[in-house]
Image 1 (cartoon, helix red, strand yellow):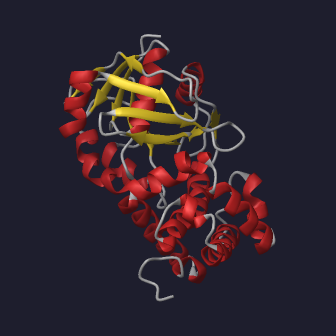
Image 2 (cartoon, rainbow, N blue to C red; image 1 turned 135 degrees about the vertical axis):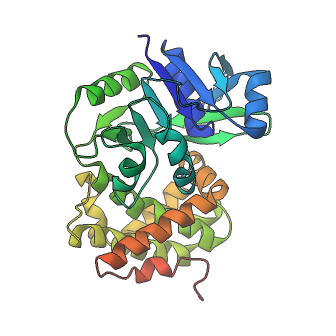
Length: 315
């Protein structure tokens, strides 16, 4: 149980994973900077379950640190940064002596670029199953996604089932996170981009939020076309739709998809897991969308329908 964990990034995801792992008995340090560092030092880590009216705010005991020094050794370092922030952090991670860096970051370009800097065998690919927001007082409102929808997912870059992956899986389950191991995280993450990039771009195209998009028939139709297109690309490119439950996205009738999307966007679930992140992390979502478009181009595919949702497109 005396595993030492560093959470490298103290936004919603870092706070939730750090807080619940600490509650499960692990020795957790949370790296923060700026206003977030000050809030954590003065008030502690404040967590409250969203979508549960009776939930109370918890103060979770974690160690707060302002930096990662080369000799700070941890059993696991969870990298919970936004996608566009990772490149700047890689040199800092590379100089540290820890052996396992769990990148809870979406990515379209495989893991060679991370391993070439951090070191071969030190990277674990993962993606969180949580969402929420941090309010002005530093309180984190969060929810966990179910195993059926999108559990915390992790795996080795080469797909092998190693002792550290099994251990990490057990640790996350013990902390209360629905968690699965993927034997092909690269395909999993590219499939995830095929889903979330159109979902986010539709909100930007609408110009409002998830609730207003739910009633925007024109954008929902375009979103349905974009989703069919991105999943068709993942299939035809040979990447492979992973997990297989999303294969229906290639063939579901557009009218049915639009109807379902309208109900999803009108829900409180969408506010927590889609809207909050999409509107507060526009830079990351555009960075990932550009990466998905570039990936498709390398496979000789132009994502025309997705392009019609992008801000620069003339409608």
